[in-house]
Image (cartoon, rainbow, N blue to C red; front, side):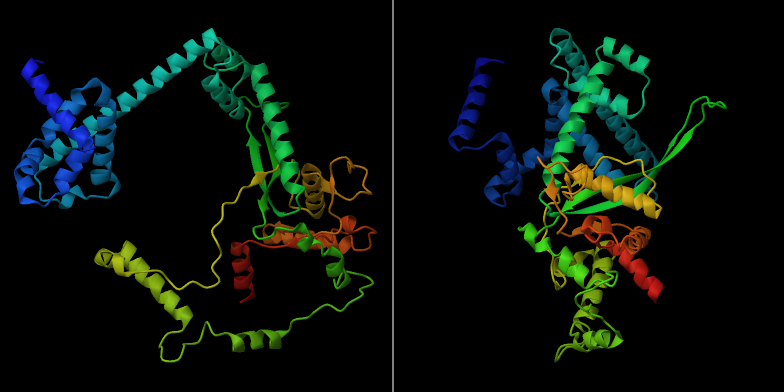
Length: 428
C-alpha cells in the first residue's frame, strides 16, 4: 500500500473514531438515511455491495463467518420458508443456476465447519498429550461412549489415540456425578416444597449375536422427577395429613364428616359462572370471545391472505393467569420396578422417599442424622390415570396400618391436564 492511500485510510479511520462509529454502524446508518445529501454515497454502496462481500469472503479471517452467513441466508430464503420454485417467473436456466449456487454455498459452509471441528480435535489431542488434566473433549466423548454402550476394547483404543479418557476414568466420573446428583436430590426433597411425577418406560437390550443362553432382554423400569411448588414458601402449609385423614372415607374411625359434592353443587357453580354469559351490551361471552380470538390467530398466523393483520391481532383476555416461572427439575435415579402393578407403585413411592432422604422416624431405613420427618405432611404426586388407580388400590388395602406413612395417607394425587381431559371425555 503506497503512502498516499495509507494516509487516506488513516484519515477515514480517524473520522470514524472521532465520531465514535464503527464501520458496521456507518454502513447501517448510511443505508437507513433518507437525507438527499447521502443519496449518492448510499447508491454507490448499494452498487458495490457484492464487491464488498467478495472482499470479505476472500479475506482468510472472515471467510468462515461470511460462508456461514451466506448459507443461513440462502437456506432461509430458498428452503425453510417453503419457496415454491415451480411457481416462480424465472426461467429453468436461472433456477438451475440458483440451485447450483445454493448447493455450492452449503458444501462450502459444511467443509468450513468440518475444518473447524478437525482443528479443535487436533488441538485437544495435543493439549491432553502434554497435560492429562486438559481432557474436556475426551471426557465428553468418554461419557458419550459409555452412554451408548461402546465396547470396552473400543474405548481403550480411542483412549490411546487421545480421543477419550480411560474406562476407569469414565467409571470414576459416572460415580462422582451420581454422588453429586444424589446429594442434590436430597437437598431439594428435604425442603418438602416439591411434588413428584413418575411414569414407566421400557428398554429392549438387544444382543448382536443372540444365542439360547444369551438372548435379548426387555426391561420395564420407572423414571421420576421432582418439581418445585411455586408459591409454597413455608412447608408448614403442607402439614395437613392428619386433618385430611380425619375426614377421609378410607379412615375406619373418622373424626369429622367429609364434605360431599353432589350434582346440585355443580348446578350452583354453573349458575354463578359469569365467564360463559355475555356482559351487558356485548354479544359474545368472555368464553366465546376467547374462542373467536383463537380463530383469528389461526387465520392470521397460518392463513395465506391475512398476514397483514398481525399487528392488529392483540392478545386474548387472560383468566386466572399463571405467572411464568423457571422450573428447576431434579430427576431421580431410574428404578428397575414394574410400575403397572399396585405392588410396583408401593415400591416406587418407598424408593422415592429413600432417594429424597425423607420418611418416618420409626422406619429402620430412617437416618436421624440427616433425614427429614414427613409423616405429618402431604406430598403431591403426578402421573397418569392408571397410576392413580393403582395408588387408590394401595391406599384402600393399607388403610388399617398404624402409621401415616404405611397407610400412604400422605399421597395427594394430581393427574396432568391431558389425563384430566381424558377422564372428562370418558365421563361424557
